Length: 261
Image (cartoon, rainbow, N blue to C red; front, side):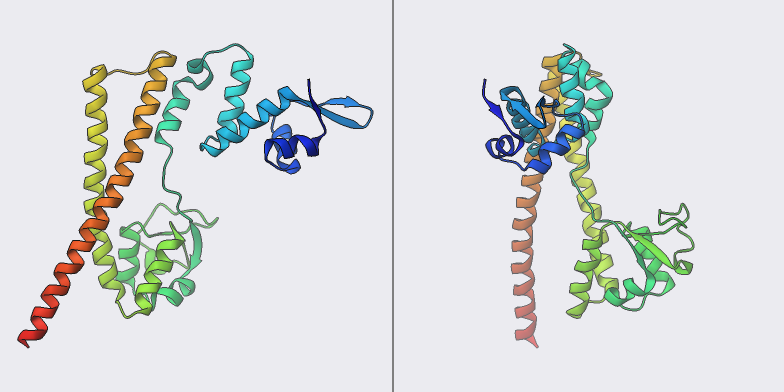
């Protein structure tokens, strides 16, 4: 059996010594053997470290990996390891990763321009900002948006993008009207796609079905993952095609109007 010091183990596994120590402290990696003051790792450590790296690269969290590994060490099956609650967590884990941030009214106005009470209420109603509570969390009421000093921005990137359009002369009112219309259509598309997934599960497994063993769990996870990925790529491709067609049509209408005038 090959033996490794921590630097060698990290190098062979393609990671860093710091990560090895973090995985060890988190309970993901067994403690090394000790020979005096030297820590000795074995092929078992290498195999488990490589498995951890692969699972992390696939999007699993440290919590899931730890539960998975400790469950297998106890001789449990996949259903017992993950249990149904964890299946729901994996299935419903969001694909979007908004960059939320607390901003003052002055900071918002520096990017969006002067914000009157109506505009602040509209930003709140559209889900772009929330009134920030005393600890920086979102307050329950949205009626006092114009009186707040700070706001929780659900995704800072949206504010940055709005700012880019405003700097090019587009009014915020037009931006909000457009994004609200697009959001409504995207919500309808998401409902159609999720409905298609539900219909497919019912078609193949029957109404009220829920996974009860390892094979059924793997089937459900695979179907949901593939459908989400295909739907996402298809939606992006469809939006690109629709934008191309809409821009060309709008350009033609604009050119025809210029010629008439």
